[in-house]
Length: 333
Image 1 (cartoon, rainbow, N blue to C red):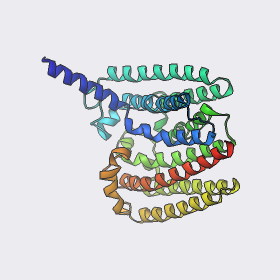
Image 2: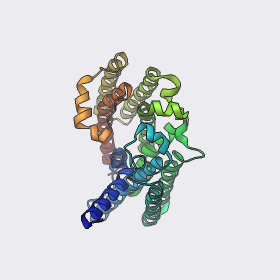
Image 3: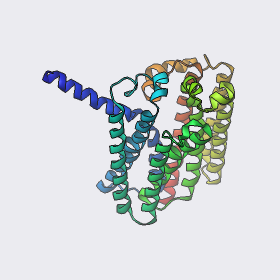
Image 4: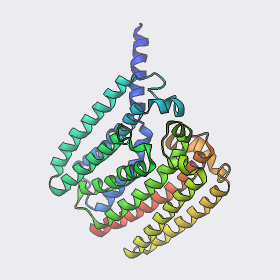
């Protein structure tokens, strides 16, 4: 084998190892981490705090989320051969043994980093961070791995995702820089239920493979339209509670913004329920060409409808979260 071919083979292998960590998914934890840091009102503009922020983003992004995605690919080979045959293992770019080494090494780095960071933070805050991280890593494993394999049943998988992406991220980020703020517990709860709603709609993309494998996603159990109805009801309830919290915290402007967001959500939900295939079709170009590489693409009508909804809903929810986190942080500064 020539030197050029050897170098190309090594580069391709490295790319496959990075791909199995699914970098696109790392982004999903960053808004909650940023919100938790902002709500603490305690981060300083020092090199120490900037390095701490970088460590926080690394341990929950490439390490924590990457670990869960690698484990998922390792244990879901048969499903991915149907649903996503281009992934590293079913395409043959990584062997199962190489995938095992991938998530084992990432897990070891995450645990070691978590121990060092928790000792550096110290006290109750350090234990809060370490406990949250270990909870996330444990859920990331049992979500895909037998015998529990939480993803087999939506009643177990959706709460696991809500805790991993919405709860422990807010708590960890807050504990990184300050004592836990009471408002952060509420916001973590809102993110839990928002994550719950979005994950049950995201399962549209694997509905065919899930049905064949006996996986109990909500779409398999009650059908597409009823899944939309359940998810939309949860999303609307999240925004309604968000508005009530903003009002009770005397954030009057934010209350108006949240209520407008709720109204917009209801309008687009009605459009999608009436026509999942073509509703909000003007957003499809953005899904395909603009944000498609971030939120994914699909040939399934219901999943495409979810992606169009997700773009609008997630942006509105993110804006509201950033505003409320800033306001809470200013309160404690």
